[in-house]
Image (cartoon, rainbow, N blue to C red; front, side):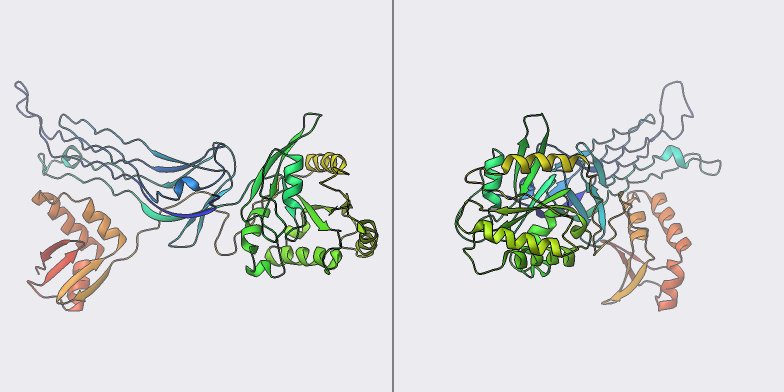
Length: 431
């Protein structure tokens, strides 16, 4: 089964907690604070594996979580940092944040890596909070929470050459003849439902990857038929072989079909119509094909848009014209650069690195008589507070006051003794 779109949930590791500890040795009467820092949590990294061709590995596994860092230890020893979680993906994978719709990265090269979620830093032990006024602090930080987000992985097949054409024009047959691929071939439309890849190898040592992708029909750029399934993958190819049926078995005019597909390419993305294209009239072994080809060539040469396109008629059954077509395709590929990454219309695809969202201002709501405080910054500070030590809670209270939360509660009408909640922690408001 070919899988080219999946949704996954990822969670980077939390940082380890710092601890409260004091140095106690026989001949060191005033050892002082010696609580170590927590270790760093593991990042979540996507890496291109050249051996993968689909996103099938994600079909039944949707959640990935990196390990958290270890807690600090006494004698000022730092906890062990966690290893990063590396998730292998096929080349051609576009990574999108489902919450914002933003494209995080585009993985196209073998071995390319992308950090999609950063692990939390380790919390500081009490040795960092000692000062002349408080030489023996009982304050330590919990580890920073690791980033968590939901991603959409979208695969666009990486191939040098893409096969264009209406359903049943002979794309799968051509692929089966010039490569060792074994696509499904039958006498009905949309036999090919998923992309098929094959490697073409020439006698002179040159080779290239060719993709047989589901056929197009009119309206494909709006999703008609298998339009999106096709157009998503054709964006990556450098050269397009546009197959046109010359058998005359259908009433449709070959040139009309040819124009319709080019129109759909242009509607979907104007850059696609500028892609290097070779016209390949097919089924030339059938009676009447030569007459159809002559009429088709006449119309192509009259139209200025298509006059520069080369024409290589073939018959996949008799192998007529195949060697010339393949040799010319290899020549064209040598002079055709890789296409630039197609810009995504729904998000900014130029960003290649992921930056965690900046802290948001806090919000305060009254829910059934309880003042509920929400916000990325204050929730992060609370998660990093060691609630088992009074000094840590007092430090958190000072942080809240510095953010203006106390003043905002008073402005909203909070009174002495009212309940205030942050996440699952509830305390009393004190004037």
